[in-house]
Length: 139
Image (tube, rainbow, N blue to C red; front, side):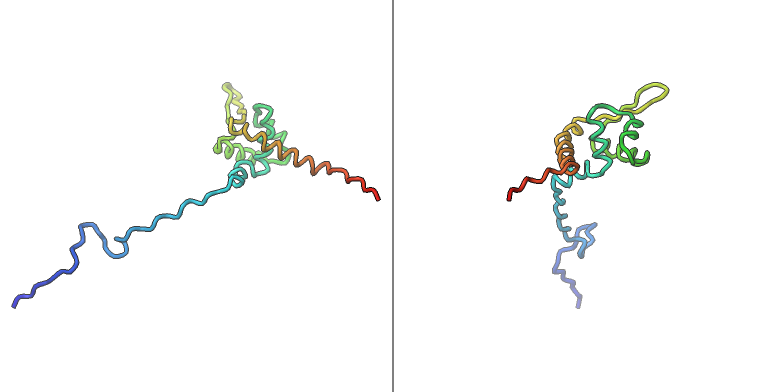
């Protein structure tokens, strides 16, 4: 008597590993949506970034002038901040030709669009420096 092998499942195609690997992987979860406040803080949330933006509102500044005007910052931090801001598209760096090759930094149009934000921060800060007078109470 000859034995006949019966297959109840069709053979796998070549290259199909079978098992769990053959199942489709679930879709990745949608990317987390970040609020506009989070995005704004990423751009100017750092104390030094906000101050550099503030100093550049009045035109291009060389590194040494930004260093002088931003009290408390180290050269290393100022370089880091400027590189980050260049990467975010907030600041342009222009290196002057010549033997001294000084770099000047200026705000991009995106950086200029921060004026209302920085102006509001300035106004709010003024209210902390000069508290309003107490209202006169009549009794």
